[in-house]
Image (cartoon, rainbow, N blue to C red; front, side):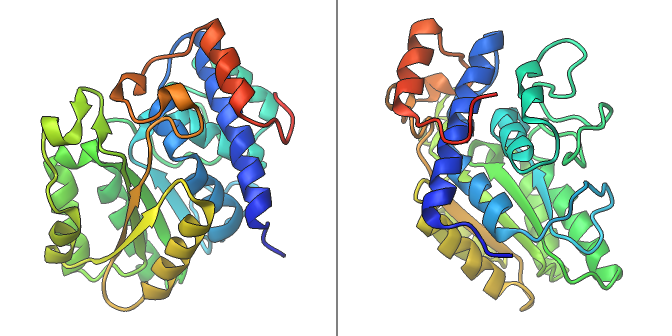
Length: 282
């Protein structure tokens, strides 16, 4: 199957961003900032990078697997899953509503295709990904495991325990990405808990480290292609991905204030005017 062009991926990302702001606005609840910042990455991952099956197989055998550790950015993931065919796009209209499968944080009891583990209690995703990647090795499954974390999430000690574990056990079918936007719910990461030299930290823990611009589609694809080429060589790989919180909507960009605040009617209209409708709104 031919992979979509950069232009096609960018058009898909624009539609996903429209989905995000509309979903969060409709219920006056959710997390638009990080969702918008990670849109290009997840679009590339699902439409270009990963080898995945449909219909959804909860066991994930003989296919790549993805885990969203920073589960509060569920709007972008739900849009990506719907737009890539896991469930009807129309279901996005149920986001965060009673009895919806699209909970504020991804959950498993509703049986939403694409979701393998509940997430949003920060710090746990890398540990889960380590286990899934080891299971693939034990099962002689040559596919990869991907996980996305937030940079503020790295304040959690469990992340670094998992980082040590992965390197020690040579879990080299694991590719982690850090959404390195410099913002978290209480303010800039440099004020809350300065991350200092993240590249040196991950290298010291025994990982191969790459860096990318997470809001440039070509950079995302090049970085993930490099990550795939480095996997299988004895070390886990981490992608330090620089993004802008709120990317694509000018008044949201670069501020932690849009971490978990929904746009009002006027702000929604402004946002949608900046985002091209390319696949049709739900």
